[in-house]
Length: 101
Image 1 (spheres, helix red, strand yellow):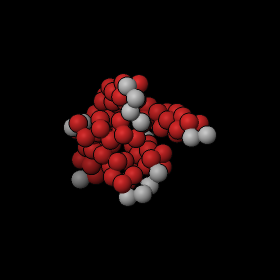
Image 2 (cartoon, helix red, strand yellow):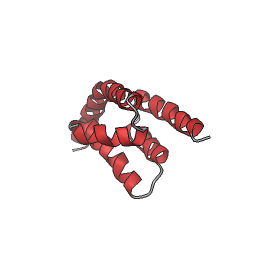
Image 3 (tube, helix red, strand yellow):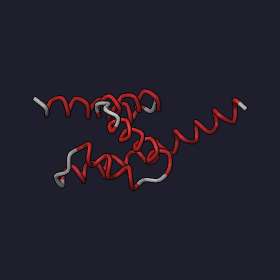
Image 4 (cartoon, one colour):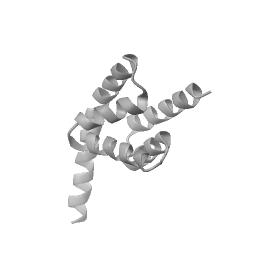
């Protein structure tokens, strides 16, 4: 049973690793077109299927419950333990904190 769970987790992580660069490209396009990061995140996550879409929608639900967007992103990065996701979250958190000055 434990190996099945570990294998399922590994497959989910690999799927997210494959999908994440495209997600970031879409996010960049939406933001460049004038949409805020949080709104772009929500819009893209509603259109995604699969593991990444599920994780992104969890972030949106956490924000709906009152958690700050950057905190929800951090929780996702900590949970997933994927380097590209962690780097994105650090960069985005810095960007959002600088833009709020």
